[in-house]
Image (cartoon, rainbow over all chains, first blue to last red; front, side, top):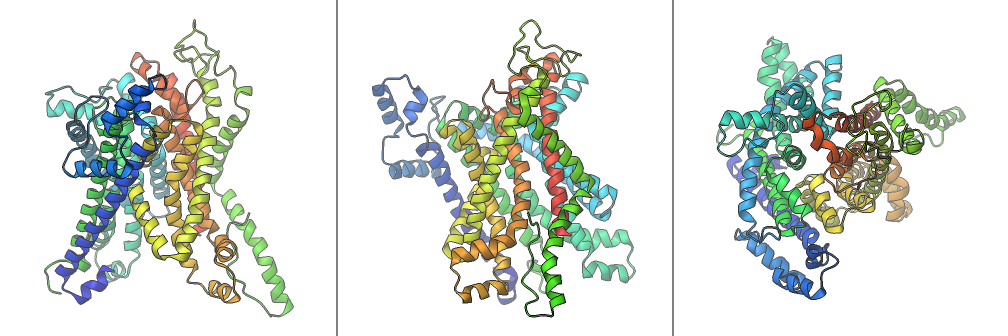
Length: 331
Length: 302
């Protein structure tokens, strides 16, 4: 689609149009997401006052709380005040802590980014290497082992692998601490030491899918005409792989890595709860158990935004890095 | 059940010998995928493990050595021994019995949720792919929005709003899978709608519902089947995770995820058997489903 435009207009213009279009679509999706979150958080529970105070509270107290929370207003008014507040950075007041939600989300997000970043730093080179090795050994035992292990690792829930890791490395061997928090003011090294064990379940879940995509891309590139031409003109296999195959096969992998942020965040809920780490996942979990709907909605929406920004960046990167759409250089 | 539907009605008015060959072709095709599957060691391994857990789910307490609910308060946190192969938990309940009985709920919920999502998703995908237009665009955007959130988080949001119960869990997980399955079915339908047999069906005057159910559906069944097995793996993942977080199967019902949540606090004290065995049970079930899925995908692709 974008290619067709590129031939008509100048390439730079085409890329700009594409990015704008992509941004517009992201905004539409974001709006839909806010409707879903609002529906689940404020329409489905029925009576939030009753939900918070429990079945035994007096009806008058429930009414008073509903009024105080503003949930007795018409739905459209509620949605409007909620969404316009969000746009201005006002995420609402937590039912649990009776104070604004935003600072909690900010602090938790920062912690989660640390854990998520560590997982990504480990998993990206590992899974790309795994996928490429599998592709180079296509159909052989090495390929089968990497593929099946990857597939299994991806679908074993994080708390299951987390438990096994805690038993082996935390309890039996005592190599790593069992809790993820290093405490306030801890050094970088100490924080890293605490975060390695929780990062591994996330790495396992992400590994399979990224490796699978890297494998598929590499197989396709190996099978292509340009790879055959490069081989036939006498280039060494290692040069063909490095210069022709990998450049093309790893491009789609970038997009895949970005879409994995979603799974990563889903895993954070479990891993942060298991390892008692104060990130956004545990914040959402505790908001859910306490029926703190403003906190829950803000947390879920934040995750949605993070995911959409990540996929947007990936799409833009893909467009900019794709040699068929390279900016500036007149062909 | 036919895994690969016959491709188009070749033949027609030919010599009798050719007609006989055409008539026999579908029968031999129905047998081939099974024969191919049964020759795959990964399928056999996955199938055996799966069968083992199905037997445990069906017979549950009757094959467990102890009652999964019986508390022996004088024998709590006992390490694995001849009397209790997998040890006992904090309340002195036999871990092996709870692992055996715990297979029931997760299998029931995961299969029911996946079935629900597959049926709803296939119907939605057929409509999206066949009609296209506004319905397609609208659903496509909703799919994007749902995809922006991890399955566990969406499920979470709705379960908190509706209150945890087995029914809620099935409906919510099925609901989250619906757009994902619809997307796969939609692309399969789009491929089919390019083919001549649909134009013929339209010309003959078949109604859209009839075309979708009778003409297209049989041809996208292989794609639906693969999607079902893939989603089953994710459903087990999601249900186990939700139970672990306390939003799934509620105690004291034996359940792997819930039992891990109840006992992982004792890990630092060294009572690893209370959590490790349910964890291995979940891992084995998930890996088994994946081995089966992988084999089916390979057979259908070949």
